[in-house]
Length: 517
Image 1: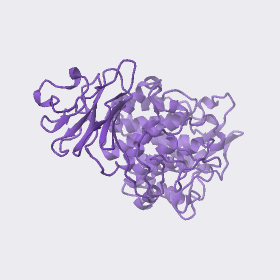
Image 2: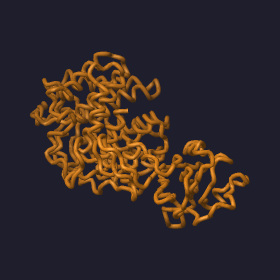
Image 3: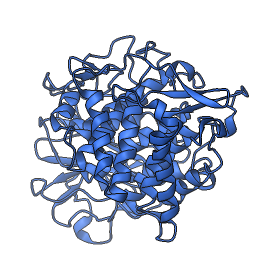
Image 4: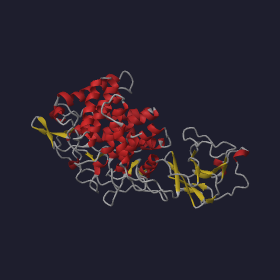
């Protein structure tokens, strides 16, 4: 899937939005200055924000609907009471929190006297989403000392969600969570994906980065984004928000849904992945010895004759089939195992062998030449191709426990991160073949390094790799320098006017932050 050939997507439209008043960006070298404090939680895609500065605070709820409410609470026990959970719907303890700014009494103030707003509390404008609106706020509430938090409640659900308790002047929130918040700033709620799906496959990777964050941290406040994405477009029928005609695009979504299933045990997500993978049974290219074609039925969406079989599509297919073989019912497992084996053997024994470079790296793709296939652009290599192949081998290892698969994965990792790697600059990952990056024509390559570090982490997590190290991943994270918690294409440099962060570059940075955990 050579980047210079992939011109089917427009530029990722808007730069990652930054919430007003958010703290100045932190990087691995420069400490974070303390400014106006912004704490956020998310509840079924609603954003609940506490902003504190100048001796006071406000609470805001965004992306809501009529009847949603938001309010401030002040602790009377030093913040010992926990934040309410989106999963349990627990209310505040009766004696531990004073509700300063309630929403509508009918919805939010329970009948018990302990929960009622005391007479000494100033009742401000209720923070309730009005008809035809999506935002509610409380107005500014002066306070002197103590612990504050913002809480919100969807009008159509029982659960209440609160930020953590906050004391004026304390340090900023966790860097990784701030990166998540900036990623979610560009989520398009109308479309159910990032930036209206300008690049369908990159939106799947953004969802994967978000899911990985939740899996690794235990923070479940963003679960609503998985469900919201699933409910849009054609996912229930086809597994993807919309079909692009490219098999690799669909396989990225299959992997995202498998990760969603692993996190939630929701069978809908597993079924979406199976719909995608099962729909590729007829996509083996006769002219390339059985590899999965890049474009559906051998013709791309622009109706040109298409004769490419690439490494990325087949590596993703290997990963998806191997992962499904350990998650579906016992009757269905052998079929997925057989597909995974057939795909790996395509790389080792059939036409795909030509993609395995003597350097240990994986070349990009094969083009039809008569009745066979030959490597094209042999010197054009991408980090994400190496990563996807590593993940495929790791997935099959987990399914079969064949140690030799990790030996091959190690060899790819060593070639990609060793002294002769074309991908490292001063020890930091780069994409030398991405001649249009950074810039408005960069497109696909903005995601590539994130895929690699995610896959490298997969290898490290086996506990059996002789190559993968925590130090390599820490080096990548330490290279990230953002502006207002938003990260551009270059790792190891501050984003400049030509390197504008967007959701794809932000998701790749989040992948690095996740992988180093």
